[in-house]
Image (cartoon, rainbow, N blue to C red; front, side, top):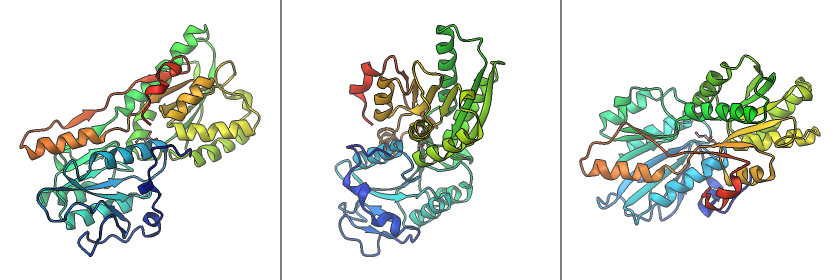
Amino acid sequence: MKKRQFLKFRLLLPVIGILGGLFCTVGCGTSQNTVETGNLIRSDAPKHNSDYITVGFIQTGKESDWRDANTNDYWDTFTTENGYNLIYVDGNSDSNRQVKAAYDLIAQKVDYLIIDPIVEDGWDDVLTLAQQENIPVIISDRGVNANPSLYECWIGSDFKTEGINAAKWLYSYLEKNGREKENLNIVILEGTAGASAAIGRTEGLLEEISKHSNWNILTSQCANFTQGEGTNVMKQILTDYPHEDIDVVISENDNMMFGAMKAMEQAGMRYGVDTDVITISFDALYEAFELMQEGKLMVSVECNPLIAGLSHQVIQDLEAGKTVDSVYYVEESVFTYENAAEYISDRKY
Ligand code: AHR
């Protein structure tokens, strides 16, 4: 994974992972900016001071550059200057750890809980408890499979539409090049099983792909949204299938695509514009724009990680006694090798 400038010092604190799993209360002797028992605490705001809103934020982990941008956005928004005491929990890509953290933060009587869930299932009981304890919950990024009355709102991307947009771009590209009647073999690298980002994108892709009888899914495999697994899974695919059979590679995030590109390069394959392999991914990271400019990546459907501002707004509205919407979608676009140069200087992640 390429580390970019936004990866700030606080994400590099190595003790977070080492001490993972041992959740305890915030009140057990923290000093300023300390990390204890797996929770990273912005402790420069006085505790139990009603001038500050204590927010427990449970993140999925660090599986992608998108995730780092999302985490940094929360740190930059939920500051003491904005009136918050933020408690950050790294889920370490472990959904049980995330649920345990939610119980822990409820026990600490935080004012709000924000959860970026790894997977949709398994949240009912802890959300019910949060409601009983009058702790409002905001679900951020991926969704949960629970009764919406258990949380205030969900803020994130329309993952299914992202999948539809990716497949629609493929058709428009083929049509533009007089290739729409060609038989195509498609390889899909899926995100984490049970994660709404993977579920929605796969659903959207399959819905559109099924409309084209000349499009065939050669294989569709999970690579967990990580670059390393993108390389390993693609390496295996290149062992299992003749290289010349692969016409399109769709990766459900940029990092898995970066990994898959490494595997294709190692196998001596060419991909992207003016080759036999069309490359499509999701997120629209800065590095994806660089690859689109080089013609190696042909399209990246944007998934916007900058959600914290909306979460902040929702909390401010709730504090003011206002009613909030149950769903907020973030704005997103589709970027291609043809327009990447025009937009790269505006990219924030
Ligand atoms: O839930 C959003 C997805 O999770 C992003 O596409 C991916 O990069 C991240 O890890």
